[in-house]
Every structure is written in structure tokens, then in C-alpha cells.
Image 1 (cartoon, one colour):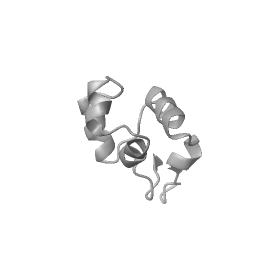
Image 2 (cartoon, one colour):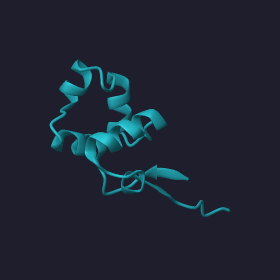
Image 3 (tube, rainbow, N blue to C red):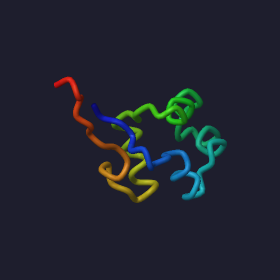
Image 4 (spheres, rainbow, N blue to C red):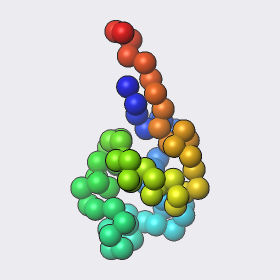
Length: 72
């Protein structure tokens, strides 16, 4: 399973770069529904992940991780 790392808050990382949730919506960087999904730990799309990595100067590995399913 792929998930956002537990110690990473994507929206907080964007805010630290000067992009509050309001600015993300106002400047049409991320829509309201996507912001809501990120707030609840949903994975960003590939396009959004690319955008987030460029803005925050982080790599994909800094944001998401692979966790093997226990049943497999």
C-alpha cells in the first residue's frame, strides 16, 4: 500500500512555503475538494505530487512511502 508518510503534513509544507489553503484555492493551484482530501490523508495525484514536490523542494520519497500489506 502506498500512503502519505505519517510525519508529513503536505498542506503544512505548502504553508511553510507561503501557500496557505486560501492561496491554493484563490490562485487555482489546488481545488477545494483536493485540499479537503489532502487534509484527510488522501494521496495526491501524480500531477499534484509533481507540483507539491516542485513547490516544497522535496522528493517524492520525502512525502509518500510504500508499506507492504500484512496479508500478502
